[in-house]
Length: 358
Image (cartoon, rainbow, N blue to C red; front, side, top):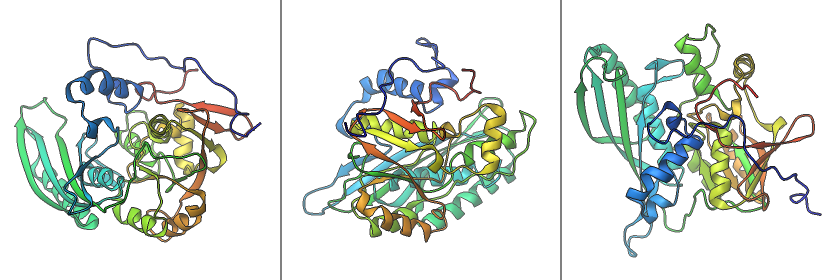
């Protein structure tokens, strides 16, 4: 019996099972988990379905012509966060890095961004200038230019201070094919560092739950890190940043797209002590907490060591580790071998991340 087939079959509902919410939009639809996926699949996709969109990646690949070789990569993202400023970052840095990273996950080099701002009446100009200063610094770090934009102002109480939407364009070299549907059995799964830092940093800064934590957001542009990895390990199959929904939800998306199983080792998954402490206190699972400066890499086992060496030489990859592997079965599932020797199924985040109750 193969190692894959010896894994237990785990079917049926997961806990908690979210309410249907078929008539109105609720906060869980923005969680990045199962409710978000259902909203996109059942509501948006029937109106906009096309091959580029249906690929299911955070970017679209647009071939230009046979003579030019390569392709344009396009991505877009909306950014809302409260508070606007948090340890390690702010909404401006988040807006730049989020879209740069989505473009970079294709293996492309991000080149240009556009930015659209929704400003709430009463927003201090000094706050806006701080955000713009941060955006400029992040764009310079990523090596991209903001080439167009738009600004709207809404009445007081109609926005949470400031919303930013960014779109990005990058160039993908000819012959490079990286996407969520490209994972293969035998691939190694690498994460570029500790998980959950961003979500816990923002939550702690809100001060709503009566605790403080020495945690900084990991928000960072990853394009130079990814180019270093691709130079060392050119046969990377999948790149994905585990943002909303966290590591577990993102790996589930890959497992479904590629029709493979993914098996993680719990003891290998890196979590900073303060992040784990907050999660334990509140009943959160760090596997489902948002990240904004990490990348998941799936690649052939014979290139894993070269990729790790490249990651460890970069400041945003110094804590990179192998956390699992890809198997043929159970297709579309993510399993985790636990610290005590059992096997746990990791499903997508059902709705809003809440303390575990079952």
